[in-house]
Length: 223
Image 1 (cartoon, rainbow, N blue to C red):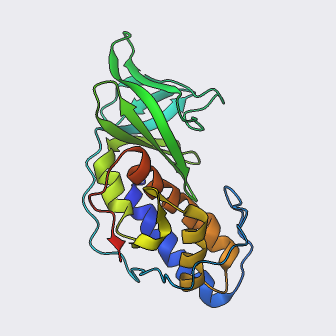
Image 2: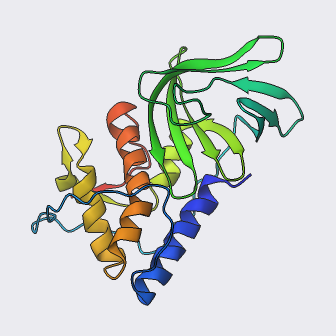
């Protein structure tokens, strides 16, 4: 299982290397249209140059999608993950219902999708379960790896890579495009587009954690 921690580390290493070599042509999962609006000159994002020791993640369940919507867990059980309106284990939109059931129809988890954050090699979706808990599912489409974590752990792990200046928060929400632009001009000025494509999902996930789930622990908000 390719864990969130490994992906964040790989993404940061790639940005450093690419920034030194110049603008590389890499097939992105998604292209972020830059806002064209310069970040505030009064607010300079405090960026963590290297990852701090990442909090350990404890998957509630994990496995690999073997058939569409069928995941074979690491313990050998076949479970069914509801598909999005788009027809996949991912690409859920906010408000869609999300459910995991056993072969006999027993519901393991059920809730409503809050939002998804498309990373460079995978997607992380956040769900508010019917019992009030928040979880995050991870799906790496190329490998079919699938996992579910407590949302607090994922938010805390994501928060290790970017410190969010308070000036980039408006009405309790992160101004995502401005923060992405500022981060990339600091991290990889020679490879802005590639950096945006990789950093956009990380910032989107942090925004969901903060504004939609109300999770602040581990997210570094600085003056």
